[in-house]
Each structure stands twice: as structure tokens, then as C-alpha cells.
Image (cartoon, rainbow, N blue to C red):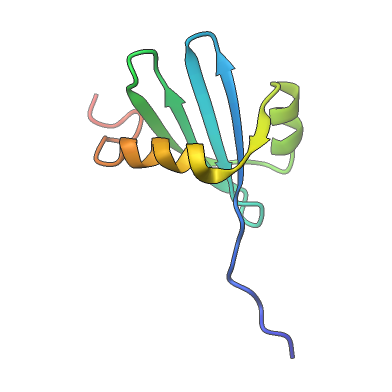
Length: 89
């Protein structure tokens, strides 16, 4: 019997909206992930997300480009220690 693999390769997307940069991480199995918004002052807003089956169509429509996880993880490491968006306000 084949053993189920627990190795999941997340997918990463990036887009710029004016002075803001938005990076999205999607777990293709659970459709959960993170959204990072990099503000012009380099403040990083991190939000846990639950996506639906149309997430890839939505990202394409909004002109997100698929990328590797390097940039996402660099920004994520800079955001560690900050409160998630909406908390502590």
C-alpha cells in the first residue's frame, strides 16, 4: 500500500498595487494560506486566509504572477512578532 506523502508544496503569488506589494501563499491541498501586504513604509500586514476552489482564477484575474517562496518567506520572517491584521487595534 502506498504511503500518503505529508510533503505539501505551497504555491506563491505576487502583485504590486501602486506602492503596495501583495504576496499570497496557497496550500493546494487545504486551500489555506497567508496573505502579506507590504506597505510603503515597509510595515507588513499578515492575514491567515481560507480560499475557495476558484482562488487560482481569482489570482489570475487580478494579474498575480506565480513566483517561488523565497520573497514570500523573506517578508514573512520580517513580519514575525507582529500581530496579525485586525488584532490589537
